[in-house]
Image (cartoon, rainbow, N blue to C red):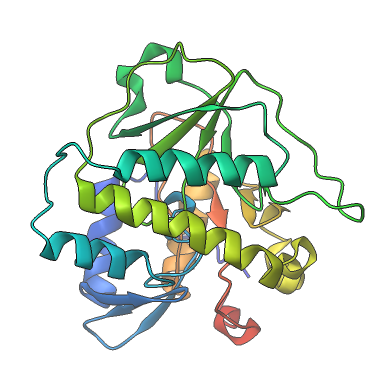
Length: 269
């Protein structure tokens, strides 16, 4: 239950991180849906790097692909077939999920505000609603001209744009090892779809429905502004990590269902 009297106004990112480090120390490693700290406390990770770790920290073979490419010395963005392979798997993924009309793909890293044409777009996440459509699963599709896809590779500020045309800004030049890891993460996602049907993401609804509106794997906070800030600190006290709010925005950032956790992980909430 959310405790009262936390005595706080809007928290800034540095304050949130200070409180985190004071209580838990630094994060030593991440695995599955958990963060492990230097004070030997395991935290449930609902932030999941804006959903990029939805498959799980250290899940699948994307990191192995990154390592193998790195060992070849391919740090930079030399001409090679990596970008072609990335476009191919993106085409396969979007066709599988009912978005076959999106045939042009672009990738960016960093703040999208530098591209005015990419700002304020609705984000598309795995299972929310990027998921294969079947006769028993009528998924509501986003019908925008371009789609902002958050890929399942936990690399900060990495984005994919899928478009029906080719009028978007050119893709950023990424290192070959990062492109190969991103490509592999998408193949991992396709393999994971049948293992995680849409209804399976409701495993924690009995606890999380009090605080979030769930759409597939996505958790939209019911609280906004300072109320969300208080909730974020309450979660921190409850060994649950959620993303801090940008103090310039009233809307709170999304969270995501921690696939590898169990109900006992929320006992302090």
